[in-house]
Image: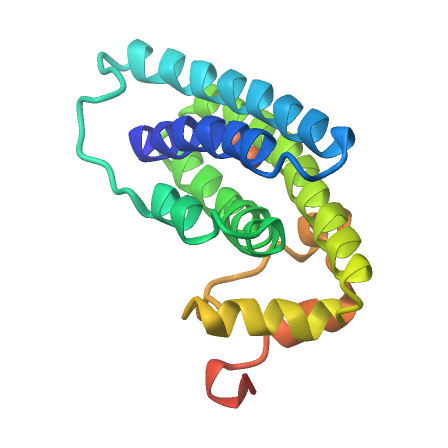
Length: 193
Ligand SMILES: [Fe+2]
Ligand SMILES: [Fe+2]
């Protein structure tokens, strides 16, 4: 599990650097935000590498998936799609998943890993907030309704809402609106695309 998270953080470094580099038409603040995120992701990766090392393993010892990098390529044509699908879906899912992972780690008494995940969760709220900020900036610029545009992005890229618990407190802190949180929690059958 720690290896899987380390792999996510490793990809997140590259994803943040990719956003800063690829969407050069965006204001300097955009690049600055994602460079800061990249530095924090590198910090997260280092913390997890430390935990893996303490347990006798290292990054690369287990298989890993390429879901995050696929999301990077899928959204390489448009900063709005990138903001919608990477920070607002993938990183936001990290907010949702972290408390349950910490609960599991508590079951085996791994306090050090729980402490690492506390840092990651705190920083990730900031990353999702940055994604939310720029998503809304781009929607305003293009005269698009943010909620409808987000739904459209999910539908276009065939991404369903997930069924697990939502970390509503963290998502609120990261700037999700009440309307969006209500919509996300609607059972998939009744989701209107
Ligand atoms: Fe991270
Ligand atoms: Fe992140």
